Length: 308
Ligand SMILES: Nc1ncnc2c1ncn2[C@@H]1O[C@H](COP(=O)(O)OP(=O)(O)OP(=O)(O)O)[C@@H](O)[C@H]1O
Ligand SMILES: [Mg+2]
Image 1: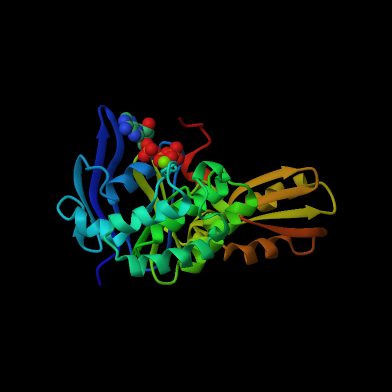
Image 2: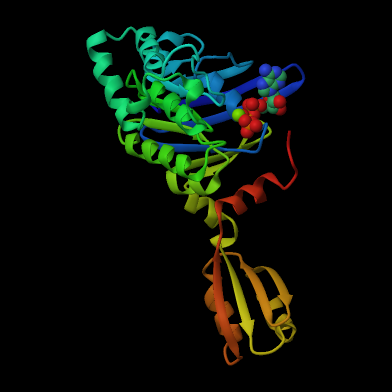
């Protein structure tokens, strides 16, 4: 089966700066795929190439089997794009913005009228359809851009940070729409809201400095980070007394002792029984488990340094 998106040794250089570096990616059809990475990682550059707005320096990118270098017309029919920066026409009303998009895609009036009515309804914009985008809130403008990207029934929807700058209510509204339309198409999105990526995306790729670092489901990524869990044990007395016992366990990756508490990172979950056996007979007040978050995975792979 053809993948929705395939890139092979894709590279993009802006002068001396390598924004994309030998990037290999395959996104299967259907579901929501999340691309994460710090500022300047190369996410928008990749989306620009995949959506035929920019040519790579080298390598290939295919959308539904069509090469972006030679089949941009075919690809543009298949994709919907929500760019990082809003790109609404401020001199057209919301409805006219959608109609212009439909006409650029050569849709017949009879079919686009109905489609636009449906989308305005779905995105909660029907009541304001004759207003200009400048009179919309940021959240409404973003919803309108998503609606516009869907007018021509795309098979793949690219969303570059669709919820940046929105309040929690508007963010949830956008994500709810994205989820509701995800069944029939492939959605490729970037976001800096890692909790949302965790909940929304079936597959996640993390990139930095133009390179793909890792990919998998959110659970797989968390599992790879020390078995996905951090254990905290509260002892009856000072935890230092257990330093030797715990230190002897080979499957403890990291041990921190503080007061009557030990914080333990295990190599993998199977080590837990060895840990429990080693501590048997001692006074333990509490064992708590702290699940790893996608944010911890992200920081552990991309570091704490602030980017551009
Ligand atoms: N037109 C351009 N000319 C020169 N350098 C550019 C250009 N566009 C992007 N870059 C640089 O390429 C790198 C990748 O930028 P890109 O916009 O793809 O990152 P990003 O992952 O989308 O970041 P963000 O999360 O901030 O949106 C950055 O170092 C950026 O400064
Ligand atoms: Mg970007």
